[in-house]
Image (cartoon, rainbow, N blue to C red):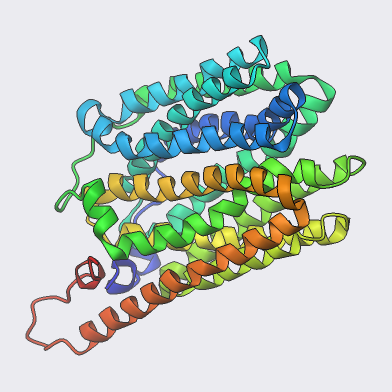
Length: 418
């Protein structure tokens, strides 16, 4: 059974404190990295398109950023094992911030791609090293709530910086956005020396290859990747898909999507701690796909805002449920691998979605591209359903275990490794 389901909920008097000094310092580095990332996320594709033309340039910029992030995430656990959290986090913040200043030097597409590649690697270091460290700082019995709180802190930059970047670019120019993004990441390096460098972790380490072979980790990651496909599309192509006169609509939509995702992530975490996160994965996927399908009506402002809101709710639920579930299925020594796999699913989904959608929309137009994307997302119902069945079988086997057994097997040992 998962740790969150295997343990009785402690009474309020015995609950471990959630917010500690180390976690607060971690929030500073998280805010710096996320602010830098989201300020530029929707601005760089527009910058690339303005200098090179065509949605393919926008898709290539976002795709490079996210795919470089995904590749870097798989290498980050080994770097943390060798150099510790502080060195990897500081390096990530530096790579995320410093190259942003170089964007103003040229609008050449390959220059922009090179900068996106470096920033993607930097972001990979911050999210994987930071994610594993953050999970280690959260009490196991409050994991869902703790990750929801982390989601809120990480969601604030997306809530504010994503639309702010678009607004600043329109009113102050691209250079202002690039400088702000650089300063946010580089200033956060000052918080890194106060963080733990290494944490003694219990249990057997889980490598990346083993994690990919383990169905109990792979299936939630695949489902989350399917929802992340649309996340990359929304931030990259929504400003291009709606009529040029609807600038206010884009700003509103880019606020609504992270706002609803942040609230949904918090509520999902609270519910997951009480009833288990596994039942939330499929609803999160279905809501994400429904919101994406609604984006077909790009010419109707009210529907677009409703669509990104529905998608945001589903995406927030899927974020919390899949990550909480994956952490619960490994010992503490495997947190780095879970962080890498989950973030890989996140960023590979966003990157692949942006690249594929750019080429697809060029041939079909935006409405059909949204329709095909939403339909493709529904194929992830299969791994979501299989995972739910496996979780139910594991719970049933524990419920019928002989009373003489020393302790029930954790869910991670009952899930197949197919």
